[in-house]
Image 1 (tube, rainbow, N blue to C red):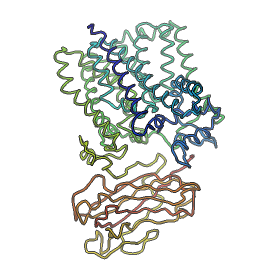
Image 2 (cartoon, helix red, strand yellow; image 1 turned 45 degrees about the horizontal axis):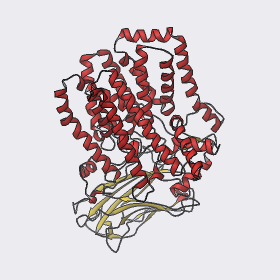
Image 3 (cartoon, one colour; image 1 turned 90 degrees about the vertical axis):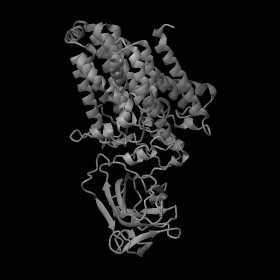
Image 4 (cartoon, rainbow, N blue to C red; image 1 turned 30 degrees about the horizontal axis):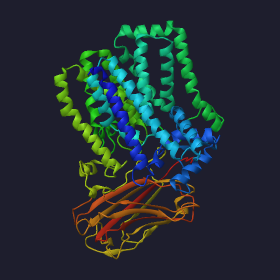
Length: 616
């Protein structure tokens, strides 16, 4: 067989596998309702432009919110993608993904009309079409990656392997199947397409290349504007000063082609200001209200190495790719410094976002957009050594990391790995564990404070050492004991005393409503018997938090199952409460001993931080 066909065979195999997985997982798994969650999470916001404008003709998204509410089952559903600007509801996400999904939206609309299915943007045919759209852009993203590898003369057999490796060895697969409406697959496609055009344009700049370059550059901006940092790689694509100089001269001399490129960029990027005008009457706004970058305090170490979401911890294959910098340092200094500047800049940019771990999800998803570049970094040194040496290296170093990623993806989808509150101890506890006993075994809740919160200055503090009545606390289940953490009393829980002393406060006493609060909690616990606290829950509840619904949330007190006994240890948690609008509601925070084994609690403290200028 001609080995130049290996990449085509790899792409065909990837398509068949992912297509089969999407159909089986989304349509036939369990009770057959998996399709309802193809459009989910942040993806609802990226997608919402299509049903709102095409079906409803409604830039306020009111009807779309109603459909999402019915689909989710929450009567008082408030989408996180809508913010309030000058009294207008605004979709904070850019519209690039919606434009790319437009053909698949029309596909769902046409088949829904033919078959008499609901034309609402969220029924089965729409969701399935959007899922297939994600697969379409994944395959084109991989195809452009293959063209990039071919430009750098990577062996066809190695290119074929790397296409498979980058999909199955990273969270690219997860965000194609389980989170297909998140923006990352589409950025992966757009960035790889732009790089492929740039490599061609550096050699020959003509109208065709200009047209394609303008389209991809516009899409890169319209999906995630920060991804324009990829332009820092232009010297890398050139490879030397003469080629770089020639490229810029061609841009100047080929004025018709350059003007065409600029026109396409302007037309595509003008889409977003027009949409903002329809929503607010203004062409230019900052849609990420109460969100932003903390450039003076980037979380670079956490972004790369944290057990919560660190890139190198959950996608160690990408760590190997960084060794490509060493190869470039000896091979081509211009490419080395260009790539070094790019990697430093993109890491700094990602790490500076206020929510550095980017919410729930598997791995540090913000890097997915650049996986084509990381794949190239992995390919260059492997291609420079004899194939007889490269193959064993791949088997020994890379294949185990691919299987590790597949296994950890399985763990994540089966609730063994948590979506946002992992730490070193939790990671070690579930590492390579597949037994059903590990499903939902982890506890704790460690959200970080909202961008608008000043974590150095809480608005309210509540604390009790259980020695005397404390304002706001219900002093139940307290006993005198010489085992108390401080002085002579502690909260005692067993099969007859299921609930600990806890906060019980009228919402009006928290301050002006409606409001949202970030809460930090801390308490001391004692296991009187082995594993006594393993089934204890931290509970936060409020009857009638608003006019339509009650609020209840419970999560395990312990980060992971404990076996130590008769030793005081500290437990803490943090999370953001939903909006509180009922001043007569009573907010309760306490420990519920569902395991009914004897345990003690003491020194319970809570800090409340009011979220500022909430526009939802």
